[in-house]
Image (cartoon, rainbow, N blue to C red; front, side, top):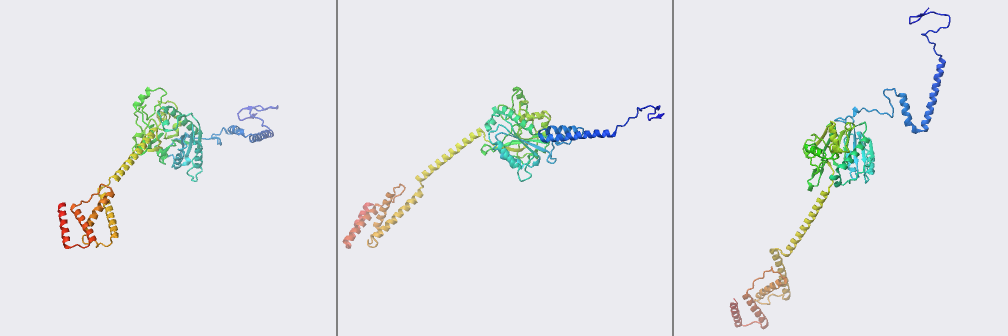
Length: 527
């Protein structure tokens, strides 16, 4: 008997017998031939497939993933060029994202923004957050100017900058029109009648932009209007440091001095009030409450009105609605389903509805009342009208002032001061007298020919010259010198005597005494 490992024994017979526990091995040459056939077949198939993919490259993206997954599908960690692995726990967003290299997606909706793009890119270049961690996404919609062409030019300049710290990461430009018919001027954009429809379309634009540009690598999303005039270069780090799900700064705008110098701009950041809740219950289902208009008196505490220029910039305020000028939000907020409602959500839409939805989903929504950025000032129709009135008043005042100065000048020319006029007339008289004396000297160069009685005629001559000069001057302010009748009579007698003496020569003593007595008599009568 033969004994086997199982403990059983079988009788050995002379005829052919096959044990149930033994198997005849296969022939080794046959196994080798079979393997050789499979190898040749596989080689031929590989060569054929390679030639097929070379000749028809369009099938590569279909065939290669199927073949690769079929060959390596059992591997726990498939390493393929077309497969990416993301752990979203690594992109939750932290307070110091720049240290952990957290990427930020900057979203900017654009419509007829050609005039504002240079200012936006100036701010973008000055951001202190590492630029290689910044991705840009632009949505150009319903534009009639050269927004798209200028945007492309500025992006090329940005990426080609010689400073290696200036170029950013991934850039996306999306074109999508939404049929926005509201004009971009201040009066149309901020008019009450256009607010509901305008904001619903803006919400659609934001959602399209976000869903197209958000990547699994993004930890934060920053919404920024391109018409922000002034903002800190460190705004990304400043907002991120608070580590809130949604956070916004305070937004004001500068004004001309005649309008007050400054003014709150973004009134869409607010806390809910009982008055607003009661108002919402009275409105239709599709109604949209908008802030800053007399039609909806909500009496909500607004972030803008709580600003203190000297307050703590890190002070936080819980909000229910937020404005869209500058929003920093964690990407997980959008991945969780929060979006910008393009419909009436709790009687709000767009950014205000976004804030309400985020609060409803238990995310933190915070505003910084004392951390302020400045929006570009665009004069409204009322401002322009007021400026025209001010310009008209200015021109009127200038005209009245010019007329007043002209009247004063005329009065001054016609009615001069008496003292000044007297000095002027006195000077003219002295000049005339001087000229007359010079003429007299030229006619009578020897002054002693007149004899001892020459001075009286000279007095008469001076008085006569005074009268003639006053007549020629023709002015009432001249004060004539008083004339003494006795002196006049005496002067006449002296003149006559002088003339007689010149004709008849020297007289006798009796004649001279007689003439003297006659002169005294005439003088006594005249007095």
